[in-house]
Image (cartoon, rainbow, N blue to C red):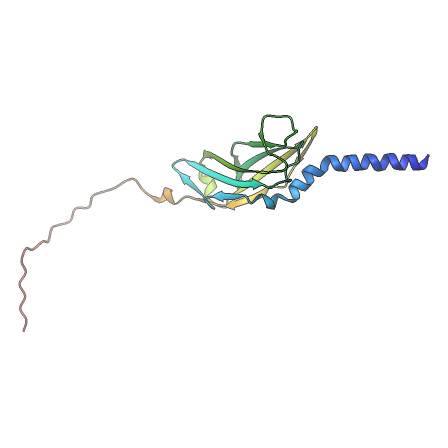
Length: 179
């Protein structure tokens, strides 16, 4: 009787760990995605901040029944602004996200923009927030920092050109004598 109960507990534990293994292993191996941000430091263009993120899900990284929601978030002291969420899913997961084949993997490119806020200039960083879903279970991954800062040099250009009038000192001929 005791052996049977121990056997049932062992099977239940194995099933529970197998159910979460896909998400846990994905979070631990996030470095293998080779995520790159272009440009390496965000730049304002007019009144918006644009981002382009590229990466690659390697073969056998993406579990077949897992969905992953990725949201880049620009964080600064006193606030944050989220870019649009992008979704990915395994071959056997239910949903309408981009399917990532288990055997082959898949590369991705993400582009988005958000309105610029003057508070973004000092001490901001771009984080990738991932949320893994498997069945009824949801796991929030630790935020992954992609880059630091927003370059605001274009704001230094002043559109108030002024003409400066000075007297003309032009002389057509000049004579010199050497002594």
